[in-house]
Length: 328
Image 1 (cartoon, rainbow, N blue to C red):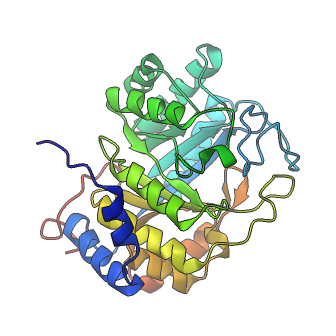
Image 2: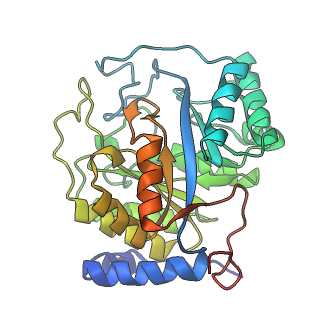
């Protein structure tokens, strides 16, 4: 079956629909493609912090920025696996490991990351890494180690991209996603809202994401967390309804994907998060920190899900139609 290309004008028309109509349709799409009242619980650990040579304008880990950050070398495998065990015990089913590298370099450090991936996968957790750019051969090594997903966000539209990052191109990011796909690894790919982009940039980003082949298995929708010492420290916060709108459009355009609420969730009310879940978000990061930015504590997450009657999704669960799902 040939994948249909979504036209930009069609994405624009969808994005501009009344918000509550979008949320209603997105809720229907979610129930047609996923078990209702189910949430994928994920934990993100920074396995190597700071010292990145990319100049991403939002990032505290860039050497080009002056954010207050304690740099840390690559963690030992046993220490990472201990954190993975704790995450599993606390209810997470996907464990994501992030290293502040511009790209993967072959050598002992990459060998160690492959060992981490194997160890996490052997625990029965879904393993995910974000390591910057990588080659097809490196992607194959990660696949052999048991990697479930590779996170590599596009961040924003192609048109706005060079206002955010200049040290790597948009095509560099797309090439890495192609290498991930060739290796048979699922792509975790989304963006960051509130970078100073226009509505047209959000539409363009969603257009690019939905036309990736294959579509991302997971789509993180981040809200910028302004960090002191970065060029975007004083960015105006994006309206919360724009966040909801992007989530709903992403759900409609990518019905099979896990739409993940990522950075910025700490500042969002539980009522807004509930609306985001209705709009199609069905995955969250738990724990106190996302790489270097704060995140709601685990207990607060589980309390909210309990209030809403939402249960954690099991690891490595194939998406099921509601008629097949336990929660139907």
